[in-house]
Length: 119
Image 1 (cartoon, rainbow, N blue to C red):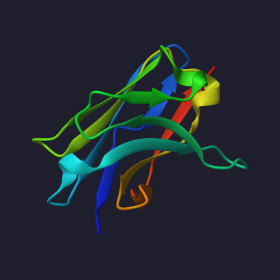
Image 2: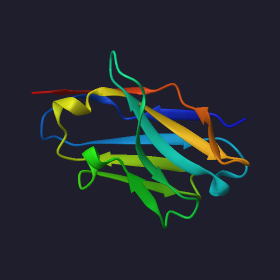
Image 3: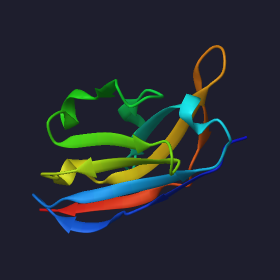
């Protein structure tokens, strides 16, 4: 099992930036696909961004394209989400997750970090 710990959430104003980080245990971190998800109150959890094992491929939900950037450091076993030009609709609890195995599935999740964007 992989353990994940997020940090970096907070309360910001619209237009500000935040950087979320996720520390990951697990000896084979550099083989995991890593993702960020978010869940707003009263809504289902939604996919935000994903990065492959090497960092060479990334994917984003349309609503954050051009504003958010996912990255990873395999040596430090961390994955980050740089969030710029934040909007009130970005307010949510953000979760880091690790995907591995066959079929490739998100199997382990962090506890979440709260991001609140005021207008």
